Amino acid sequence: MPDQEPIPPAPQPSPAPEAGPSSTGLPSNIAAAIACIPLIGGIIFYLLEKRDSFVRFYAMQSIIFGGAWILFAIVYSMAHPAIGLFFAVLLWIIWALVSIGFLVLFIVTVVKAFTGVRWEIPYIGPMARKQMEGGAV
Image 1 (tube, helix red, strand yellow):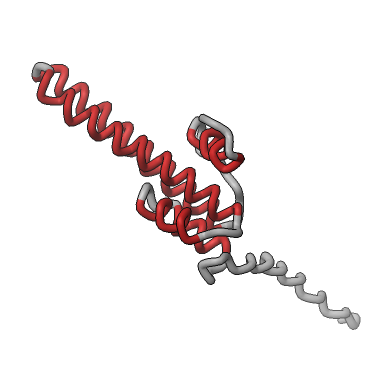
Image 2 (cartoon, helix red, strand yellow; image 1 turned 90 degrees about the vertical axis):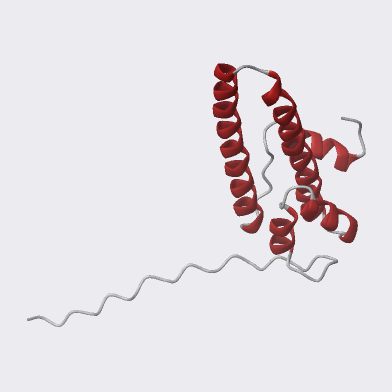
């Protein structure tokens, strides 16, 4: 067997740079991910975070997203007793699908925030951005 040089191991991927701490003392990506908790997390981090626009954006988006989720729940709870049995089943199916959609959006938003990606929820993200820029919705 001829002498063969060993193949050098593939270089290890370099880890993503750590995000700097926010004014809450947490890394930006962790603070943004926690701020994604609909309404409550958003309000807490919007009030606590003063410097990091990444965290404040996710907090504002969470406030609007949580408000939309609550508004949908209120409309559903008011409409459900007011309609017949057939439409109640149809309304329940719509409720289930929309709830799954809200849950999927929540999970995607938390993952995007945790990985440091600024991601806008369709329709809600632009409203949050306008609020962050000081413009009216």
